[in-house]
Amino acid sequence: MFENITATSGSYLDRMGLFEFTHQKSPYTINKKEESGRFIPITIIKNSTEQSKFITDMIPLLHLPANKTDAIKYTIGELLRNVLEHSGSTDGAIVAAQYYKKSNTIRIGICDGGIGIKKSLQHYWASRSKTDIEAIKWAMVPGISGTTRKEGGTEDNAGAGLFFIKSIAQVARNYFMIYSGSGIYKLLLHDKRIEKPRLHPDPDDDRHSERDDAPYFQGTLVAIDLSLENKSEFTHLLSAIREVYGKAVRDRKRKKYKEPKFI
Image (cartoon, rainbow, N blue to C red; front, side, top):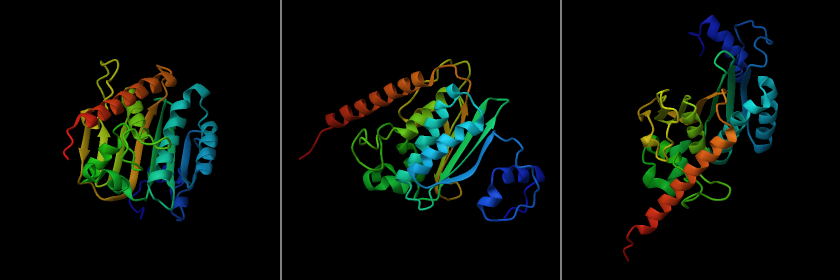
């Protein structure tokens, strides 16, 4: 399975726990203390108790000040919750993270082997999830949840998670990608001359690349980079995103009620 891996890549994958995760003996000898406190090895999360413990235990391992961790805790918490509540995976979520001191950035990857975004939406939103990429984009629209057709979701599932996380990456001009089935959606970085990138409720309006012919991936993968250069307080950022979210849901409800009804 790992025949073509270079020594450098192999040592890194060993440190991240790939060989242990796949129950294979590693051909590499490494110092397990190397880069201690800078990465979270591949970990499986199967329930909300493990999720809470993982987030609590993860932060000290990264050796970051408390004011730099709010976005990390929020992002990982939301992505893990999405997997546990919507993926249908019996194996839980698989998560790994790496902190890069030079760029002051943390890279996070979370995936599952569940039913995928398209299938999770088809019960209530079949007309909006005919293809994988269509389903991915619809899942990022504010107020859309796979658990209800109600605009704005429910108290427990407000359809906010993916929109908020995409928006966090967008404002900070960070990498963000979703891969599910044969669909891939990737944000393109904004021009740094634009002081504040505009948040769009419709993911089609964001600068992005997409494809619907990628090699089929059973389940869902989300990758995001978070810059820890805190130019604005995270609470203020969430408030701004929440305002866009609320307006988008209200506007869509008004539009829906204005549509003619034929008896």
